Image (cartoon, rainbow, N blue to C red):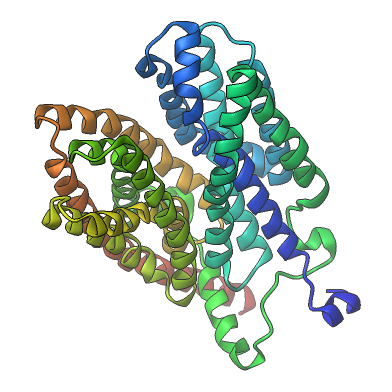
Length: 435
């Protein structure tokens, strides 16, 4: 670190966090939180049902799972920065192209391409970059940057609605393309850096000198990584995959919140408001789980699913008869997004280490994306079979939260064993070289 930076207490790593916030507030927010405003006007304009048009979102979800596998070799050969620039430009082009589309199959193609984009921008970029630039408070910064998607969604959604109301849905897509091009791309090109060494710096490690030895010890533990071939054949891998799958599948209930409220006889206005409450839960949860995980990573697989489990139990026990309990329950359930988007990659890092994170996480995402894509429509079918009641769905989601805790704790236990064995091997090899 330069003398000026030491005096001012500034570290370039905080600009990396700012970049991650921008990527989340633009790329992720537009692809997920701000996509729903197009469903009705576009489907009506091109003459298809909303269900047929929403398949484009399913295409995005599916390719998001394989996107990490596709992009990992590219990032390893070139750089994360170049990958981010290319993907953001691709996202901008997709939105500009969508403003000219006339057939639904065209949206399916761009949906698949957008899936590859968000496979990195949703959680990989922040997770990898922040772990490179910081030795402390990594989970908090990852959670904070991820939460910006919800904050920007509150701002962008009404603006997009007004633009579309005044100029049409095609103008809305042009606006989205411009947001990526004007805001996200410049940050990727001019501010984002791959490693602290690119700026002649060391990773930021905080200022608490009293805890320096303790931090160094923790850093050494976190530096132990499991080789990819060993990881994917381990019990810890399948336990971690099960944990993350439970997170993803439980998340599939959140888009049904408005329908759930309607099934209880609530007005459409209240149903929409309740859906917004879930996003508030997500926003609070992402920051909370980050802070908690920095204290002890075990909170990723305990507190992460335990909070939404409490919300689901409140909904099941109250039966939706109490509006205050309904609101509290939905806010708590919304925090499952924190466990999924923030917790999932951090679970993989905690269990297997950082070295082969993208390869291991990519393999897990292939399965979890398929599970999520299958569970979402299945939930709708189950509700229909139950005569519009969500009771069984709530019970299944609660069971998934409990299962995720059990599998998560087991994954952590097995991961510690693997890291201990790996550390012994490294020590033995080092001893042989010395003696």
